[in-house]
Length: 235
Ligand SMILES: Nc1ncnc2c1ncn2[C@@H]1O[C@H](COP(=O)(O)OP(=O)(O)OP(=O)(O)O)[C@@H](O)[C@H]1O
Ligand SMILES: [Mg+2]
Image (cartoon, rainbow, N blue to C red; front, side):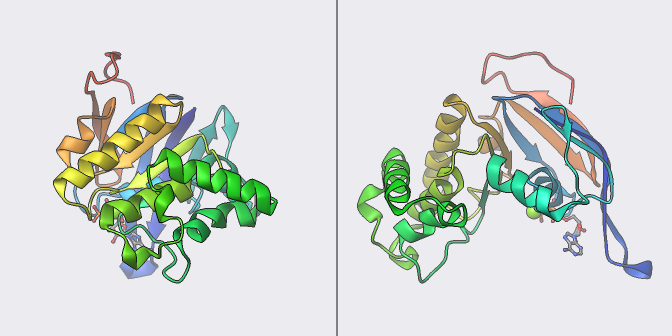
């Protein structure tokens, strides 16, 4: 489903250049749940941003279902991102002065859904995450775990095929992190392809496969055996 080859991304200019990605290649199969691990600064977030069409690469190719993702067209990138990707981050990134319902409704509003359809979709999604009773609450009234559920609801409300999560349990205590990890697994069991950047070995080992990133390239990968797939080796 996803195949990137020799992706390069550089930040800064002249004497302050940072090579965040130095020719990284990997692929992810449809329906897979993959963890990405690596030291701070190794390029994980940059990788995820490029996979999600949030950022363009400076070089290399990105094939999505065999089709080239065109980094040169901002319009195409936005379309790709809106149609295919749900993104979840460590600190939830909810809009403070919108209630839960309105936060989750945002991606649908951008796409011009009718009010009726928005209400149905949002309430169904909140219910699937067990937070329908929080629809009128504001983010500051919620626990970290509840806020992350809202953020997940916002990511999945338009039914993207891929969920990308950057340290989604990083700001949560262990038990809450485990619950959030289980939500991602359930989404995966319901057909979503999931890629989670994490520092937490417990979260990573519950994915099907772990990809290790070091200095902007893939250092290796290992199957965890979680999903009964032991194909091994290939990234
Ligand atoms: N917008 C930016 N401008 C300049 N440099 C950046 C930018 N984003 C990332 N970098 C640099 O690129 C490198 C990779 O950063 P990235 O955020 O991808 O690392 P990471 O693996 O996600 O780290 P962490 O685990 O701390 O989140 C780092 O050296 C970082 O300083
Ligand atoms: Mg990061």
